[in-house]
Length: 236
Image (cartoon, rainbow, N blue to C red):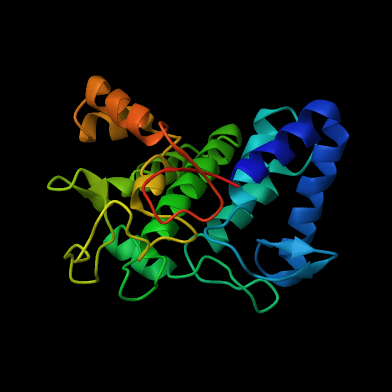
C-alpha cells in the first residue's frame, strides 16, 4: 500500500495528466477484462497481491486532482465488481466477496489470508465510497462507508487485536501478536494498524488514545529490515 501511495502522489502531483492516463487505462482494462486489473505489468494481468489495490489508487488519484475521466463509468464499474466475484482476464477479482458481504469478513478457514484480505477490502470500500460521493450517488456512498467498517468484526476484546475468524464466527486459535496465519506477508500486530480510514474507531476499540500511543511506541521501538516473524515494525 505504501508503494501505491507513492505512485499516486507522483502521478498526480507531478503530472495530473499522467494520473488521468492511469485511471483511463484502468477503466479500459476493466471493460476489456470484465473487472479491474489488480497487478498488471507490461500489459499482462498477473492477478497477485492481497486486496484490490485499483480502488484506492483511483480514489487517491481523484482526490489529488486527476479528475479528467468518466467518473460515472468508474463508479458503476466499481459497484459492479465489488458485489460479485468477476475475474479480470481469468485472474483475481474481488475474491471471497460473498463471504465478505454475508459475514462481514473473509473467513480464515476459506482463505488463508482472510484477515488481511478483510482489512484491505475495508480500505477498498472506503475508496469506492469516496468515488460514489464525488459522483453524487449518496445511497452507494452510505453503503460502502458502512461496509468499510467491517474491520470491527475482526476485533477481539480478549487479545485487543484484529484476529482472524472462521466461518462459524469463532476466532482463530491458537493465536499470538506475531501470528502470520490469516495475514499476507505480515503478522497480526503489523496489520493492526491497517485501518487508515477510521483510526479513531480503532483507537476507541483498543482502549483509547493513551493506550494506543503506548502500543505504537512499543511497536516502533524496534525496526525489522526484511521478513518479520516478530511483532515489529517491518521496513522493506
